[in-house]
Length: 241
Image (cartoon, rainbow, N blue to C red; front, top):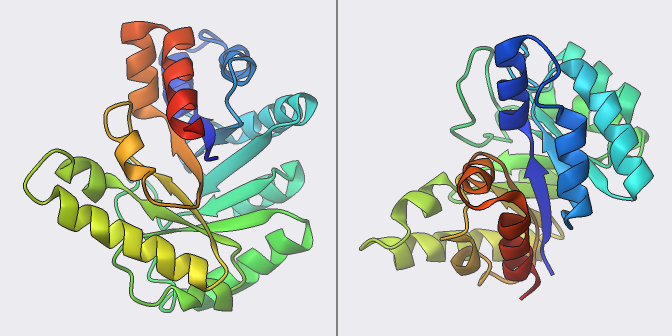
């Protein structure tokens, strides 16, 4: 069964747009967990335009109280790593985002950035924090994820989402299936995220062994259209089938 982690960045973005705690990020996160989500994902960026660093500890406490996992995503800069090490979430997903970047749009060249990643991952591993690395499905050197100490990779799924339903859908899907198999053969767990939604998730999960999907933007939009109870129920049905 695939675990659903709800990315609450868009809730944080709405909160920050009015300068007060409305909508309440913790209350919405608790509602997602109470509706059956396996965890919460948060991606604070250096400008803290949506998720903020001080959200991390509060969400970790919430997830711990509920017996669920917090996944914190971000670039392994010193300030980010200190926030993560202090909160000790279950998982930290390292992404190659630069300051000011609108959204994640590519995975790591792990071999090229090994000198950056290896010590950061060692610090997190020493605290019992599971580390996942954001990667493109076509990245040819997945063995470097093991080399630098990561336990999992997260497949960047925008290309899959863009091709879904089109002429190239089967070929692109095959690339992701092959990437998952290569990672699993190396002993790596496989997560996935970016632009997955109610329309394309079931197809993606035809790939065996996907441990976790983190979904935020589409899920929040779908909640506006259909309501939280309906949307979470549909996602859980897909993930558990």
